Length: 200
Length: 200
DNA sequence: ATAAATACTGTATATAATTACAGTTATGAA
DNA sequence: TTCATAACTGTAATTATATACAGTATTTAT
Image 1 (cartoon, rainbow over the protein chains, first blue to last red):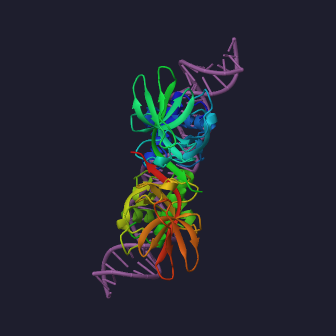
Image 2: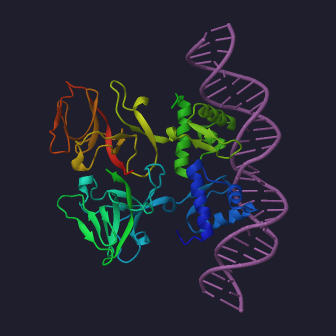
Image 3: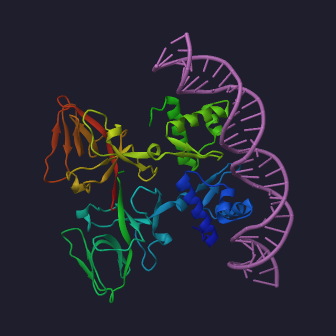
């Protein structure tokens, strides 16, 4: 996303939703009607701006000829996470996977490529992509993506209180990780809602 | 699919492909041009027939207003397979999952819901959905869906010859299955190309 | 300070697209 | 045999849609 304005983001998301719900993109009039524009040209201008910023493409003379670009419509796959920055920082995005609403019960904000074997007892293997939802409140029993002093880890959350959080690796060779949120910097990046593995 | 004719299937697949490639459905003229129709009404007739058969929906007065029905555009999930019939028989389809081209390296013909724990050492657990491609030739080392005397099983193919086929469960508690294709009825239903797990 | 970008209104028009009506030919079912 | 379905051709008309041009006001970079 090349710095879309607030309005442009709204319009882009509307187009995305329409495609998702109807199976085809909206017309200039439909966009205008939705946002209260009194002229279809307002939508036209927005589309041109969105095209210029590379998030979609317009087919000339073609009704509903709006094509979303791969990166803008897909879900990011996070590989290694650079220290310091947010998990969804541009440099952590390895690629994007076409979005598919309805493939899992919950929405997916990003995929995380699994490193190591700490979760093999629940069938999460190295290089699997786990689907993460950022907005589901973490709860005990869930597999979560946590960040302890900047380091990203995937574990089962078994206890959560003000002074103690326990993260359990699902592998008998590993021991539970105890964190004191008052001492250590602990952030939950999201809950694991699914898994995707590609046998290629 | 309610018994589409050959021509109807061709047209339906074309529409599906267009949506997949462009992000929006074709017009009557575009369909006509592709199939060599000299009148857009030929496409109109086909669309009406496809609507009547329930595989798509048409929005009146709306350009490119073609919406594929869930079942027709989705990928079937196979639960228990009834004896005798083909694996993709209507009665075996538990539900359908929206298709997501590009989510895996290979195409997906159907998902199979995994029963049992015979493949847990490679991270395939009960109730996981494994993505199957019917057309990739089975080869040793691949995880395959085989049918031995009508019974469906998922195993790693470790040997294949005219007189002996070895299927290996990926679980140390189970032993290899040896099949003589000359004696037993052995069919390969496809190769496993991916895995999908929903943490709901 | 000034140009460029953003976010629109308002009008207009060529053309893209849907879709009805009237036929033709072939095929399979009642 | 006769009727329904399938698979088209051909014409035509309404309307849906893209999109240019001319403005205005505000915000944001340079």
